[in-house]
Amino acid sequence: MKAILNELIEHQSLTKETARQVLMDLASGKYNASQMSSFMTVYMMRTITVDELEGFRDAMLELCVPVQLDAPVMDVCGTGGDGKNTINLSTLSSFVVAAAGQPVAKHGNYGVSSPCGSSNVLEYFGYQFTSNTDVLKRSLDRNNICFMHAPLFHPAMKNVAPIRRELGVKTFFNMLGPMVNPAFPKRQLVGVFSLELARQYGYLYQQTSKEYVILHTLDGYDEVSLTGSFKFYSNTGERMASPEDLGLPRLMYTDIAGGDSIEESAALFLKIIQGEGTPAQQAAVIANAGMALYCADQQSGFESAMKKAEEAILSGRAFQVFKQLING
Image (cartoon, rainbow, N blue to C red; front, side, top):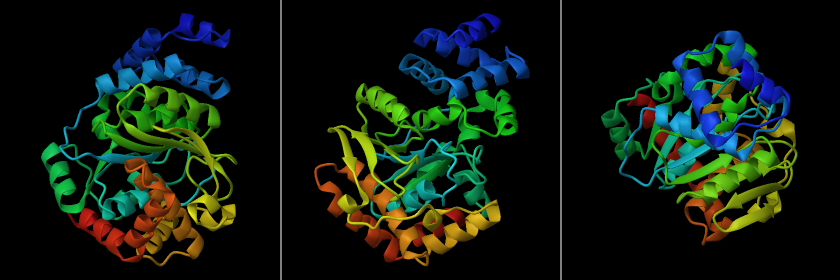
């Protein structure tokens, strides 16, 4: 590790194979906590390369507990790490997307760089995490959604998790999260915390058979915040879009601010999923769920996708899906 750290500190980069091997070694417990912390810290101070990102991703997928699902599932996920602490948009959107008819295999975790991640929310409401494939398939059959708590599917990362929690800031593991869904979804909406990372994701996803939309709102959000224009990369190329293009209003940050604790975040989540959120909160959920539905059917355009998302939440179907998932 000392040699690798020296290379990185001297602004050299790792080959794809070296990056893969380093992550395999991290997972096996080969390095001590100080070495692992130093390695993660490097990537807070310099840009990750496509080769490094691909190598880390390959190692994570090699080490994961895979889930074989029959449905053409989608993941709706953000990297986190944008420092914005918004309402749980990707989690809310997942239920809306499922209610609109697109099967969802949601990959999530506890919040690391934010107070409340998707796992925190679902656990708060009493959801029991599982890695049992039969249970996940039944959930998908009954509710059109299943939830995969990342630590259960990436047990090799148990050495890293405490260090991530102690650091409390985004690391390259934030960048990897959406790429390492153990269900290997065929469709994916990914929000990322920087435009550079959006480009890199776009490049890597081009090499796959996935239907994808990778997006970043230009004022710094890893989701469609509606606070400004966003750029997205998809199977049909790259494009800029504005809230007006989606038929939705422009918002202020305060309109979509999240809670300062798990309890506050969960209370906001419940109000919004019940269809009782503010018009601004509902618009933000519709924007993100709509972009996921657009990802699944890129020929139909924004208007159709946004209408499907709006109907799924305002009809109460998204809340029904949420209740069924929580109650088993």
